[in-house]
Each structure stands twice: as structure tokens, then as C-alpha cells.
Length: 129
Image (cartoon, rainbow, N blue to C red; front, side, top):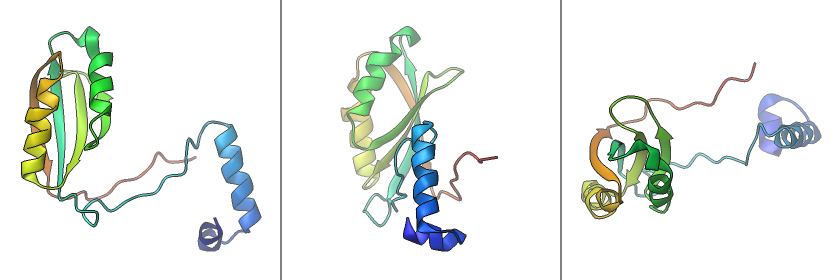
């Protein structure tokens, strides 16, 4: 908190109070640290859309996806596919292994479509107004 306080020019105590208040209101769910995936050895980042045989059975599929360490987010989407997931893998071979040996074996998954991200240009949080 002290570095944040210094960066924005307020007291450490004020930062603590504001963070605690945001937690109490449920706005700040947990402290967030932004990790550099590439420096941790995760050189492949991909987004995969998933088509299910029955979109009503989405919850069991999500529970299985949550067990896969390389899958870092999952969203329910509109359109031809039911889910989109974000995957970080050590390399393309590991990505293929995750897709074919884990995701494609989940009951209810009938197809996937994967794109590889060359680079994340930016990421940001929802603006606070």
C-alpha cells in the first residue's frame, strides 16, 4: 500500500481505508497482481471458443474447465459458440495437449475454435467514475 500511496500522493492510512471500504462494498474482491506470463515461461496465449452439444449443460463443462491450470478465464457468450476461454501455455505443443487431451475430452464439448494471440496490446479494468 505504501508504494500506491506514494504513487498517487496520499497517505498510507488513506489507501488502507479506501481499500478496506472497497472490499466491504464488494467492489474490490481480492488484491490483484498482474503477472508477466512470458517471464513465467508461458509463451503461448490463446482464446478458444467452445461449442456444446446442449448449452443448458454449461455448468458441468465450466467446472471441468476450471480444473485445467492453463485455462485462466471462461465467459458464457452469445452466438454459435457457448463459451470462450483464455489459455496460457508454455508453448504450442502444450496448447495442443491442453486442447486435445483435456478440453476435447470434456463431456458435452463438441467442437472448439482457437486463435493464438501474438501480443496483448493493453489490458485495463473497468473505469471508476
